[in-house]
Amino acid sequence: MPNDLEKIKFDKLVSEMKFLETEFKYQKMVTEGAAPSFNLEVRKELEKRGRIDVIDTPPSQKPNREQRRAAKKASKGTNKLFKKIAKELHPDKLINQDNAEGKKEKFLEASEAKDEDNALKLYSIAMELGLAIDTISDENMAVFQQQIDDLKKEITNVKGTWIYGWHQEPAEDKKEIILKKFVDNLIHTNDNKNKLE
Image (cartoon, rainbow, N blue to C red; front, side, top):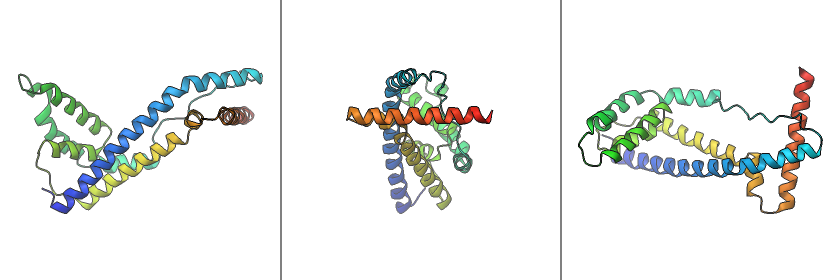
């Protein structure tokens, strides 16, 4: 079991991760909700400029090299930890148990965390279940911190999108400027791409 200092540090990381996950989910929902209106306005602007030939292709959602490396590091030990959690929460073992539905949800959460190589979430679930956890190594703590840093970057990336900036801007004239700059950029990128082909 982790010592008191490790446990407090771990609890701090878990709390921060939960907050950031909620923040990220909120920012994504805001952006996804604004996307149809933004895309409609972009289309109108392109039509007004006579440039409907420009097709907006969304940027690749593939993880970058840094994210893949962090995920690979995080996967060390996650399978072993997931197996411990699955022994407690697997739906086949929950038949006729009280709170089976809540445990199924927790199992799905653990499965998702394993698929995402989210070791911090798996450790958190294991501790909630009272499962015996080996001492949390400095390497694991560093991986957990990296996961938090990556999530912070993702939040920053969402907040840095054209859609988010456009949606959050309260002044209509400034919204129009953001939209026009986006369309300018879109046309420029498309024209450069066509020149290279």
